Amino acid sequence: MANLYTHQDSNTRKTWLLMSVFFIFIIFIGWSASWYFQDSIILYVAVGFSIFMNIFSYWFSDKIVLKMAGAHPATKEKYYDLYTIVENLSITAGLPMPKVYVMDDPIPNAFATGRDKDHAVVAFTTGILKVLNKTELEGVVAHELSHIGNKDILLQTVIVVLVGFVTLISDFFFRMSFYGGNNDNREGKSGAIIVLIGIAFAILSPLVATVIQLAISRKREFLADSSGALLTRYPEGLASALEKISQHSGKMQKANHATAHMYISDPYGGKSKKISFLHKMFLTHPPAEERIKALRGF
Image 1 (cartoon, rainbow, N blue to C red):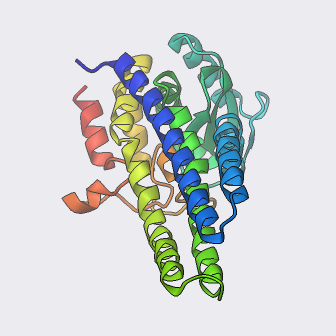
Image 2 (image 1 turned 180 degrees about the vertical axis):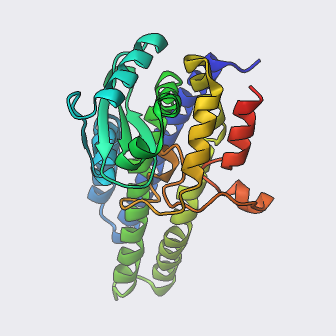
């Protein structure tokens, strides 16, 4: 029977699988380029780059995410209520106190990042601090701490860097294929094949990025909601917070498709409305109504 620990183990496996797939993908591109240009050095560079990016994404992806979100450290003096809520709930959850960041954005939202519980960060918009009351904010904080406790954060954070670089590498290969395709020293047929491979990568990379994001599974949001409700012993706090958040239709100033799956709510906004089953399949978050209903039936 699935439980919190099997979910944690699953996230760990998914992280290693994602990094392994990235490693193989870059090597394949390097091998293709080295075969076409008859230069083995390109393959060696690809292997070195793949190893470097896996290490880099593990150690520094959280810093990249915070930079992309425009987040800055929140001092206890300026954000006393937020800081103490995070501190108290961290003690209750048995987690080390994460670093607290704030984003200057009127749209209510929040996310957690970091490579593990000892190097975790929780970030909140100024909008969410204004819109929510204390019990609602406690619900949101508990939700984000649950992502940390459930080991969601490494998988969520690493995917931002790796998927982004997969897209960049695909674009590079696409351009290189056209450049190589004009080389008179190469046979026309092989050049055409490389061009087609480049076009395929360029077209499929955004789709691959979406599929990988969805592979993280929207179930993590339901689990974080339920774990957060257990932590505060007050499901209505988070339910009410999600209700308020879902009523704001604006787009966040630093909204980015690469990081959208990390937030408690879609950073591209859109008021809550009925959506089709097909549309629901490609959402990074479950509909707010379903999450609220689950919390109030908890």
